[in-house]
Amino acid sequence: MPETLVDLQRRALDLAKQADFGPDAVRVNAEIVARDPKQEAAWTRLGRCHLEQCSFDEAIVALRAALAINPANGIATNLLNEVRRRRALTPTATDRAATGFGAREFAALSALSPQEALRALASRTEMLFDAINASPIAARIVDARKRRGEPASKLFHANSAHAQTTGHIFAFHHGGRWEPQFSIGWFSHPPSPASGMRIGLGFNVGPAAGRDPDLAAGQERALRFFERFQQTLAASWRNELARWMSLNAGFIQWGDRPPALELMPQQAIEWLLTCRHPAEIGWIFVGRWLFLDDADDARILGDRAKLAKTADDTFRSLFPLWIAACDGPTETAAPSA
Image 1 (cartoon, helix red, strand yellow):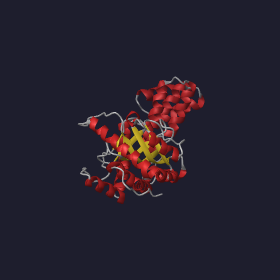
Image 2: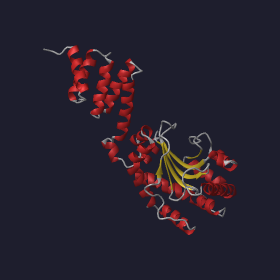
Image 3: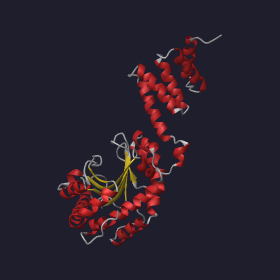
Image 4: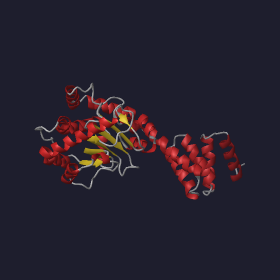
């Protein structure tokens, strides 16, 4: 005797009470919505079933159907958020073959808490650090820091990545918190306007916070470095840095703002030169940007070797400017294109 709609609903509720979200629960709830597409509860249960089966696309379809019937369905809303979180953490075969950062990694950055995102992406960030550490420019930077008496063994350590807000991970060279930083940062959309990555020089010159033993002295040191950077820029790098930026998708960024894509290189340089109260801004950066929605950039982001090569090229080009900012204005070579 064929099951009636009432029989199916009774069976679906029994399975839900037993926390059974397996194939039988999928079948029963799918049959209910096939017969009556307005069954909000059945769509919600079907979404939960697909979630437990790791059928994330099907779960999203079911939960969106429930929410289309009742946008105030809190259970469906929470389940949809959980589907997105789990899908971000579950790589496809293509994702597993990739070595860099693609749509899945940026989705994880967007969906997870800061510390969860750090853990989820740790293997990829640390392998990228290892690849950059093996580059010739990394050795030059480490040697330069050693000559100044700074403790240095490698450019990036395994714990170099940090996260304080959702959608953003950043790293700076070991020991470089109050120095001009060789910096890498990842941003996801949302909350940023676009998913991508920055590579270049940054200055952490904001009000001191944290557990460092002498925070005020650290900020003062960073501000002196930024002043030297401005002096060097004005003396010998104004045109050269603008040229490098124009050839390498270079942009400045400051504070919590997105990259200043609206500024042409010469305008960006002028902003850096005329910045008179950097401590009030907190963070100032200049370097190369890679955006996931650009096909050429996405190919670089998704391949660890290409990404490490891009970091090597960027750090090598900006190395003389970093040296001058650390040691004071000198005759420095122009950046390479």
